[in-house]
Image (tube, rainbow over all chains, first blue to last red; front, side, top):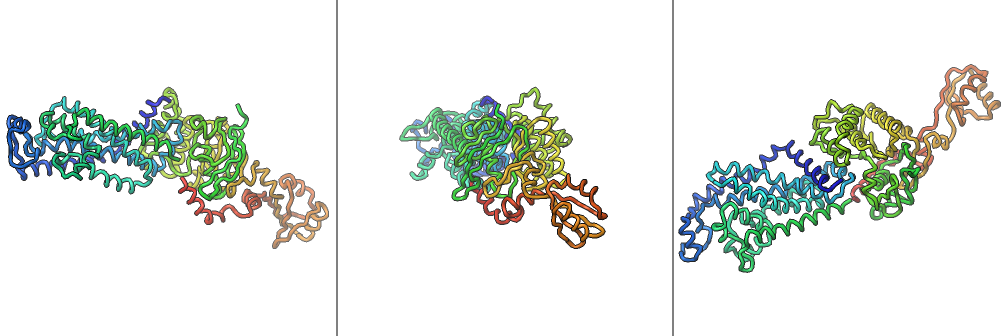
Length: 286
Length: 323
């Protein structure tokens, strides 16, 4: 059997299972939507974020205008809701992708994994199919949130959606690989869920979903830079908000502001490492 | 093509200090039903796991369909079908979806896939329920679906690990009908484990396994014959006179048991018609009991198959935790 075919079969089953169980999706879109509605709307109105015109913003970027407060945050020509929106899309993808590993834990707990392990299929392909299945499913809440966005007054073009999809998919594949990797070694569903929750929260909070990764205390700064999710959020934000606005919010490594492609490269390297480890770990289990 | 479809030489499997399979050697001929009989924890499942490439032997070799179970895992996996002791279905999918997944992953050509799925589902009488999710199936239906799935890719060897464990007698009988039909019609070799004596009786040959070793390997009839003679119980008008006649005519000591006489005689089924014809005392009732596999197991291992279970549950647990 060709590898692609095997990957497709494993992927297809996970998609089919998801489809049978699609109401589960409600749970995974509720949280990001609540964040978006409550934080986004609540914070932007109660905290009185200064919105600059595009002209004023240009002057700020050029360093010619000083405003009260030190943060780039309040010097944006957008309100908090707009700032947060690309972050929330990333967050829903990240959550779904990491939790995707649960399908493997489930397969083991309910015995179905044996059916796969004893089949004449290279386990590398099985692991790949599992990762791609989890990644595909992880995209769906992000897409649903995009459908809701115009209701909240967030606007973007269809072209933006098509530019976002590959970025979301890269983030999804990288983190699904991490999820599947952990799932090859964690035997119980309870333990898996607990570990995922423990990882997920810091990853989300420190990835630039809720605040720009600028002017942070050094320990926090360090954590945001070693967080792979940061490199997924940044390009997604750049596509939604445009380079001009997102550049001052970008990740600075050793004084250099990371470009979109550099961020993508970091995330891709992380993803490649994770999927390789996941394949190895999945192949080396009894 | 080798005569033996399974060849096992000096197989050993250790889990830490515990030796689950202890220097086991045997062959399985093409097309036979081999029953692995023994109590829980005797090493049956571990042996199956090694033959199915799910576990690696600590030492020794085994081949299935001519392929080495360690070095040629892929070819072994293509040659075998497997029904596990524990369920291994995707309960969130329907019966037919489970089978389609299996057919695809075992490379059953798409031109024959639906036809074969229909055949196996009809065989296990689940065609009408094919679109129901497996969650709604009873235990027996699930097992039948697993059996159908194991056959879908026409394996050379079908491994059945306790295929009827926990099922009601009616379902057990039905599953056995499928198994024997399959062996007769398709020539599939069947390797099964059981601790039900009556099931082992239906095998072509039985390997009695205890404490990781094979205590005996032969046909059920020969195994029983090795235990001893058939037991004939009879009741006559005059038991004392009858006992005398048996002693003088056949040189057998008959034992008195209440108002009955018990005699032991090899080949009792051939002896009985002759005996009734020749005997002068009027016989009121007569019965013949052949030694059962329980008697075989008791003689070979020194204990009954059931008694071991409580003591072995810890061993079983250790075995399961080992992988």
